[in-house]
Length: 237
Image 1 (cartoon, one colour):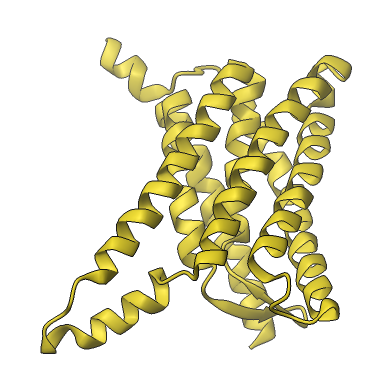
Image 2 (cartoon, helix red, strand yellow; image 1 turned 45 degrees about the vertical axis):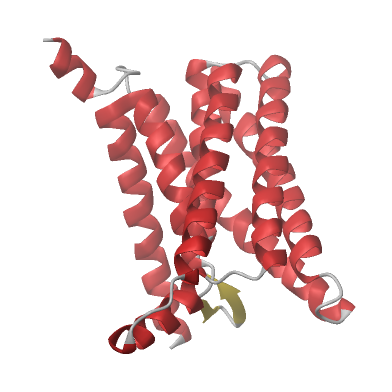
């Protein structure tokens, strides 16, 4: 089972990174905004499922969530800090709106034929208040920090070949803050300290690996000459 999950996880990552590149290739800057909106929702759906991989129990959603940082870093690199900031708030609105709407949807009383579906929806969307608050706080704090750090590193390490420093330097710090904020808001006092630390460390390690794997993908994306995407060029023609 662990070997299967590892192989499937690699394929899962390749598919998502490929879709990320395709979205940017076709739709350019607007495609990155759209990707952030979709990824914020999908990551929070996937996180309710736990798996075992490499001897660690982890939640899904880490690859999808890491791709949000990839999108804001790419926006910062090619379109400027203000566009990256707009994208952060765009993603926050999507996350807040989807969380709020689905919480309201769960309040409806199902008929007899819909009881099983209600139970399934509650399992997927029925986030506890602390988990929902942790997710929203962690996203906003870490993404704003990521944009600021990337911008500062862009001034300090401005060479084109130093793109990897800007990516990893900003992402690894901001994702640690993301993990710390989420685990603190959602789980502090819920688990024993040793368990809480284990969740914090393993979650961050997974994000570390995913961020490293995503760096070559960003180099490919940056090499695209048409920053607004093929679709906009066709529409203009």
